[in-house]
Amino acid sequence: MSHSAASQPAIARNSRPLTGEVRIPGDKSISHRSFMFGGLAAGETRIIGLLEGEDVLRTGQAMKAMGAHIEKKGEEWIIRGTGNGALLQPQAPLDFGNAGTGARLTMGLVGTYDMETTFIGDASLQSRPMGRVLDPLRQMGVQVLSAASGDRMPLTLRGPAHAAPITYQVPMASAQVKSAVLLAALNTPGITTVIEPIMTRDHTEKMLKGFGAKIDVETDERGVRHIFIEGQGKLTGQTIHVPGDPSSAAFPLVAALIVPGSDITICNVLMNPTRTGLILTLQEMGADIEIFNPRNEGGEDVADLRVRHSQLKGVTVPAERAPSMIDEYPVLAVAASFAEGETRMPGLEELRVKESDRLAAMAAGLRQNHVDCTEGEASLAVRGVPGGKGLGGGEAVKTHLDHRIAMSFLVMGLASQHPVTIDDKAVIATSFPEFMDLMTGLGAHIEAVEAMP
Ligand code: S3P
Image (tube, rainbow, N blue to C red):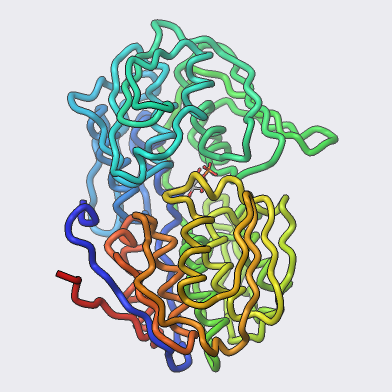
């Protein structure tokens, strides 16, 4: 993988107004699931608009290693799946690189197979907790033959001859844990129930239904979701149009808000309500974001966004909104650095276990670039400087193999008085390979810098 090679520093400088129209690459969550479910379903799946980021391609490799046929024809990916219950034991460890979603969902998918599967990844992925997925899998009869300390990767799973259906209440707000149990249920007889007290992104439920799985969701009077899935049914190949990733759109969006005079249009953004918390928060901060051309594509809401520079003001982001914007806090902290007053972000405990400890990484990078902020156990407060006077000019920000930390600080440098440098831009390719070109195309002053010897 490219980011295991020498690091590639990059610098972002105060830029002239950003202008133009961009199309955002496909949603990462939906792209992973497209490869997985297409690789599992009987018959042909066609994927249009797949995100060709490193993370997603790893998932494609894993599905190939377990018997799926995957090829690219023109702009489309064509998959012939194995049929539900018919994945093959991979001949070698599955290497998920940087991809937590790919690794955790695949653990669920293959965990209930009577075969051995080994999972490996890069330093970031190997530091992330996998017990949250292994715990429910153990209850279903899956053996963890080996794992690094604290249930971390590298790890090897062995499924039982017949897995047991369970009722599992997800203990933290995590779509990955929910999804891992639902996917394990696909190869388990009977009905598995997942109880989700706080709703997270619902792509697994929606897409599995589209592939023909017997899955039902009931929401009780307290808002708790009960997801029932019957295993060992038939899944049939689908045509999938992957909408643009709102978590990637967040970077040009915040850039346009903080660079004076900017006026850009971002086309084809997924507007699933479990993913739009950032837009709502920025609007509360006074952002000029016009949502137009709303449409439904392949069962998902999609729209275009016109974004103009805005003077933002600090707000308190409700903790219960966190699941709908969990990947967007780093770039929200950047927006907050240019807002008037304080922005308070509570309820961020999950940020500690992302590709990096994002709370610590953001607080360190902000402080280095002269932003006044306070890092709590599970919170961040940022006191902004409208106009960005005095901001930037720090040492290279440590990105810790985290694509969203890298992109967030490059966005910051576009509006701060002094440049902002990051230690490694290579990791951006995990989710948004087009980032540098797309941003410079809008007028952003971002470039690679010579690595230190
Ligand atoms: C994802 C779920 C979230 C998110 C990740 C993608 C998914 O992780 O941060 O980028 O596709 O299910 P958690 O489930 O750990 O919150």
